[in-house]
Image (cartoon, helix red, strand yellow):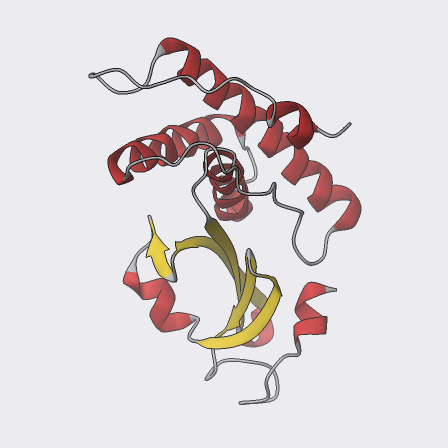
Length: 178
């Protein structure tokens, strides 16, 4: 039984007038730590493509302010726990996507790739909700504007069309997904 099947069996706790309850904060912290561990394991042992995301839970859908509050909390926990600052966008986005998807919010994970000349490649990870950027600047959409495809509806791949290997040569989805 995987982490997500165990976490998927948690009891739903209603929010009070002041927002999230103590039990919910505890569950969010635990799920965030488990998601960061899963992301780290994926980066070390698998390394290419995208780690599997949990299915979107059907029983609980959050209102936008609560989803934003949870995303901020997950981001804070991620900044405190992740020491690999160059890849923190991956850990933050993956953990936030896992926590929100387990609460019925269908966020998608996006991976962007761009060639940075002799220095090599640069990558970025972010989330979208209903096709719109979620907790991300518009600069990301401007840089990574060429859609390459998707692994499934929850994981999408992008590139910078003016800054890829071989001039304007497109990278294949297979090259990014591994």
